[in-house]
Image (cartoon, rainbow, N blue to C red; front, side, top):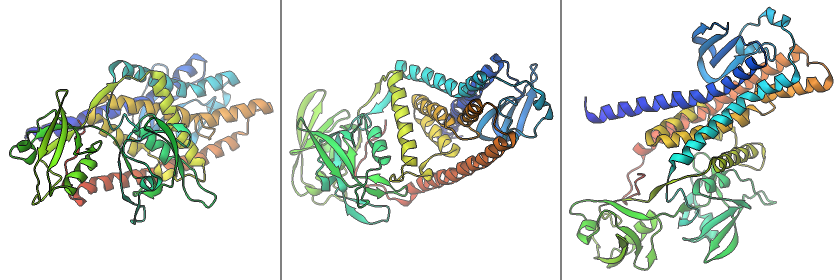
Length: 477
């Protein structure tokens, strides 16, 4: 068997293992919280299931609990008939549960909140590991400095329109400090803040206020973003800044004849600073009729090489180089990681309920999308798997505490209403509400999973449908 096939097989097996360990583990940790606190408070547990629907396999423990793995990997549940008898999820209702003694309000609240607490504890443990071993990042991910401003972008209707960033006066080298008054710390934070924003003028036109730093001064610029890509999200036409570092030089290439070596840092072409691959490609293409001064740094020493005119070059932006950028490890504290993930989660939730936002349920990811991200992260670096698992657990904790029937927050809401009114809500009302919202929840999961599958098909088809660009692109080392 060829080595590349063996390597691909091992990579996929490793990715599947990490998905089961961390995605399945996140669900297990949540249900374990309910289970342990319920047992501690003397609440009867009849079943512990990872997944919904028919069982894949099961066993009955010495404690009389039915432990099982079920076929639908959409979550899990702990059957607690004294607290929440849910036949729509757990199966046929046992008449014997009606004879069980009632459980205090305090015990109910502790058991229901325990799942979210265990997810947060698990996330904190993983965040501590990231703090100790480091989180990989690259220059373009770690910055909010603009490396390129496009002249035009294609909107969601397929029309070429002027770049909102260029129209607003954004320039290469500007550092974005805030968007609509919210501080942005890195490029991912910047994009997520932009996408989930909801600013509109009185006429309904989308807008954002970018606070930028230019030459040591802070400026506020109003930008009118366009909806772009198949996802119809806000874009303004900027690309992050990063260093261009020579990773490899092809033999007998223009770059090799020029004298470029692996490790060289390309600083500027003539008087144009290079902060992005596109600036590099644009300058080489625009000035191929004349000599170009290539300013670089080699082992800390400035150096200038002269690239001769190449009027007949078929691909003027291609010097036969493989370019990369700096990568490093950062060590964010667990509290910084929690703050970032919680902020991201609440921004997303806020945009979902804001009628002025461009974010709808179709933009979310269900189990299919989550598993896909786990798979991609597992192929790249296990520390990225840890980072994403932290986000998943914080999302699980917050989502489950929402006051929606079937979720833990819904059970807490019903228990609180019963406490305030002096008697529990009617059983039929509770069961009907749970059944309705369970169907709605499953429908939402199917709905977002449809878009997850469509994204996977689209992304897999894209490399085959798009020709390779003529210029080099930085390798994601």
